[in-house]
Amino acid sequence: MSTPTPLDDSMLVENKYFPGDIAWVLASTGLVWLMIPGVGFFYSGMARNKNALSLILLCVLCGAVVTIQWFIIGYSLTYSTNGNGFIGNVDHAFFRNLKGNPSFASQRIPDILYAVYQGMFASVTPALAIGAAAERARVVPLLIFVFVWTTLVYDVIASWSWSEKGWYAQLGGLDFAGGTPVHITSGAAALAYCIKLGKRHGHGTDEFKPHNVANVILGTTMLWFGWFGFNGGSANAANLRAIMALTSSNLAASVGGITWMLIDYRLERKLSALGFCSGAVAGLVCVTPGSGYINIPSAIAFGIVGGTSCNFAVKLKHLLDFDDALDVFAVHGVGGICGNILTGIFAQKEVAALGGQVIRGGWLDGHWVQILYQLADSCAGLAYSFCVTYIILFIMDKIPGLHLRVDVEAEELGIDDSELGELAYYHVDRLASLLNSNYLNNSTNTATTMTNINSGKLPIQPGTNQYILS
Image (tube, rainbow, N blue to C red; front, side):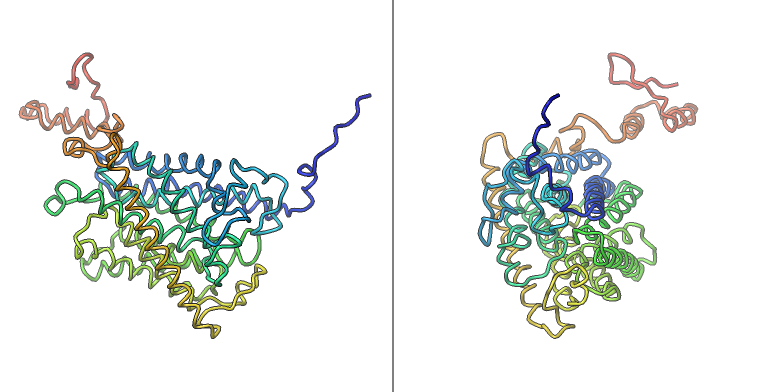
């Protein structure tokens, strides 16, 4: 009879954890991952059709690059317990020493689960930022930038906000799910990126309109759904606080969407689908830092302020003359700042206590100085992210082979074709070829040609660049 192999300590820890909490954080991890392609579809729909595919792909690639970075060094730099007030160390590089230990954030879940969950936050943040570089950034340098930026910017700000020894956490700052580490950080990085790249060719003369608002709506619904795990999962437990955060997020998104749409209606007398989607995201951004600290009615204020402030912030790029192609700074930077300030007003001790956390509350609880803490973190995150991002981009642009921007010809052709060699809409390219040919000059063939275009029956003649016309 063989002798049973003794189990090590890491295999005897199941009874330490709560299956319900593990299940909820696992589900939230999947929900937050869904936000990555959600950002891609949102950005893709807002861009021109010749850049649609690249934006979806870049967001997914951000997830892949950051997943690798997070495994190698990112989680350790952010959350190792032996670091300082700004950054951790390499104790947990390659996810070492995580398997059998409970998370510092909650003793009810294992550290490895918390690491994977927080890796989704790290992945979605640069995906948000790259929207400002849309339609003119080279793909390979952008991906290298994402790896470096996550290490030098995101990991540092997330560490000072959420780790045990972070200076902002020690100060008593309140950021439930990423007002500064995710939104202000990505907004500031987006601003630096678009300024360093310069304006798109044709900016100020050509009309850049969203090519597919249906994609924007699809992206919005994916983001909205994923945000339930983003904010609700940040409770790190299946408890009443998670329900409060989820409910507040849903309400803020709804109010923000309608607020933005009504502001646009005042000017244009049209109910804009794009306006509703932008406002819903603005409401979600704004409520992110406070979602686990506020009572549900307060979410209405977050939605109204988020939708209004971000709507008017979009005008900043025209006033200050920079080309933030997809309004990342206006929605995420400004929305994150407003959310941090409102958290300093509306945070309440009774809500935090639902998850076992003791806080001094915000202005509603008589702790007015909390607003100053929130402002300090907002300013620090904005300044650090903008300055370090710009320095990274400046250095990269000087390295041979890593210049950041495509040339004018590639930009006119579109990033999809020039950088990927693939298109999101081959039928649009076919139609453009036909409209530029002499074939449509023969009116008797027009109806047949358009029927074939709509049905997709236009194969390419082998060995040529010509379409076979029925």
